[in-house]
Image 1 (tube, one colour):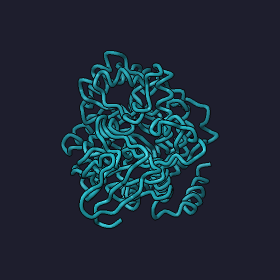
Image 2 (cartoon, one colour; image 1 turned 90 degrees about the vertical axis):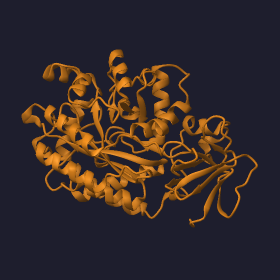
Image 3 (tube, helix red, strand yellow; image 1 turned 60 degrees about the horizontal axis):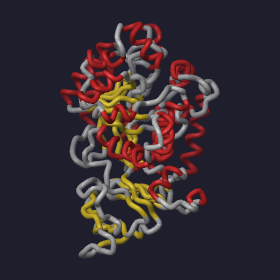
Image 4 (cartoon, one colour; image 1 turned 180 degrees about the vertical axis):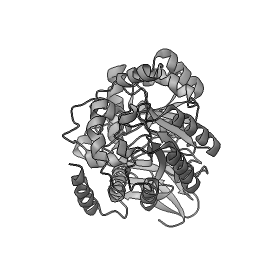
Length: 447
């Protein structure tokens, strides 16, 4: 693409705020959306044109929770047909085998799969640190840079192993001093709070059953000092509630508040088992929740109370979650699953527009990214474009609804910061066949 203006012209349909006429498309320059083009109108001046008449144009999807390394252990026979705690206990010993090369391939595979599903910004929660993997955040940052996708590096941590009463084995946890020192290093090297940032850092102890209370407190202090967000798993299963009550004498949200985490800079993965009072407290604090419908169904974890959460003022985003619990890194698939499980939880008034909102605006709010999540003038030009050419869409009358109800899976075009990262359904500059072969070979070490 040249440095001139780009007119994304006459889309088949476009997801913009109600009352905005952008049927003529969008004008993009310097990585931003600079104008909506009304129906029948044309931009002034010189510009390049992309004919979007076959495309349904939506904001780039934003993935608020993932574990890239788990692409190496999808559909593993040791872990299928299990709930969370036995699932973790089956897989933790395998994850001790993670190497720098395997993490690089896993990160590339996950990000490419995400991009091909329409994702423009992804947050990965990496907390497994076997010997030799000290540079995990550097590996992930470099892969994201090469692909041209936005990423939140979650410097995860675990310092409470089986010998301490936790779930992880001893050889994938780190001591608190090592964790906190590397958190500071990663923030200093990669965190950018500027508008349009391509890389940001969040501090992300794994869960109440794998970190000490002191590490939670120290992490919150460090994040506040450095202006970083906080992320962790919370209230994912009834087992977690029981664990917190038995070992800490309180429910997970009380634990979160005691450790200084109940703030508007925190977003939580799953958030299924909050009661009414806890939901009100989350809303008052401005805390976010990453709804992970696919993983919640695979692990039989439960139903996230999205309607009550949003009514209380909680920011609700969407996450793919681990590629060994959702067994996929496809967020458009997650949008469809979000619609279906929430209709089952509530009723048919949950719409495809709710699911799109969670995956775009809601996710951007969870990550504190006010420059992303919508096709508004002034926002970053992060755009996903889908065609309805496949047989599955034949006969569909509402193009936006068709993406969700008919099961869109692969974007035809994806743009991040005004640059194409997917063209003709293929990731730019990526040898898919080689990636598949190399990643598949690496996964054999986890049999």
